Length: 176
Image 1 (cartoon, rainbow, N blue to C red):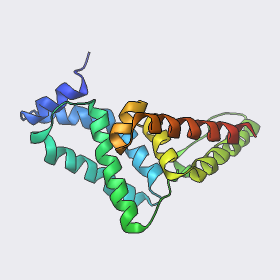
Image 2: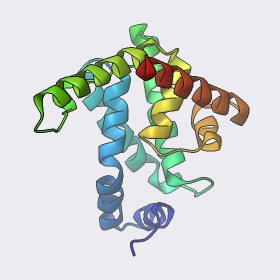
Image 3: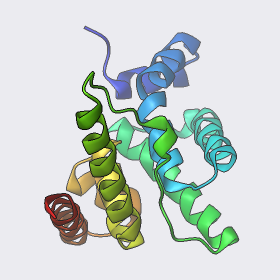
Image 4: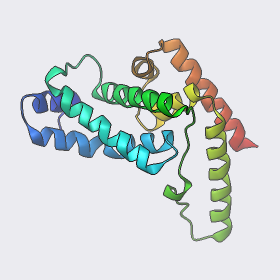
């Protein structure tokens, strides 16, 4: 059994580079997808993704496990996204449909899957920014409502409400 994230970050703080490599390997996929889905341009998403890890490295000496590591990591990501959106005047989250494949040997099922995916992506993009972010933090980051609240600087009831509305709107879009 591998060490929990918080223990790995503390080990990294003490100089264990291998602990950082484990954290990076463990969280890079979900964090990258979160950034990519939050930013329309792949190059910007990649830059912000790298910036999150640079901030983790820079903050290692100050790290204290007051919450789950993922909450801390996605708080950094959230703050970078807010800064990015402010600079660019953006408030949109988009998914890159080229990164999603529909696997099936049946061409009719593939077409149906692509159609469902397109409806989902359209519904996701139509969500208000706060609901999109709550949904992506929950789905990509695995954060709970309390952790979403901590990461976004809101309260838990607001995070629950945003998540609930996002789920309802996405389900309604897929049920149509």
